[in-house]
Length: 92
Image (cartoon, rainbow, N blue to C red; front, side, top):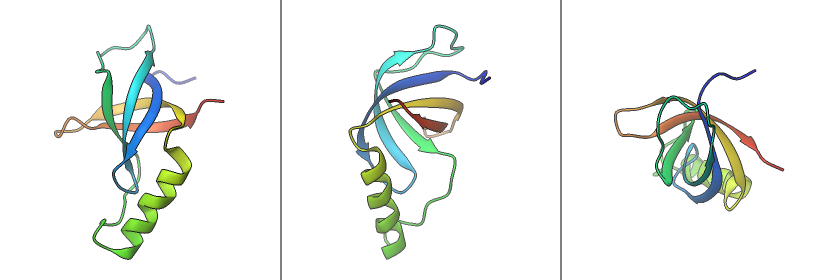
């Protein structure tokens, strides 16, 4: 069973192969921290630079997988740039 905070919502925009913007529509009642109506989320993986062909391919792949989908993000931490580092599950 997961113990970290979670937020759920629709993926609005994919920025690179590991980062997207989420419109938050649901949060756990047991969350330890508050979350905004829109959050930037980074999945726990590295992504090639967008300035490379591999970086653009990674962005397109993540976009095809997540854009406009509803996901639940299990929050691990928030970095210095205010981006949430999360594990992501699809909501059916």
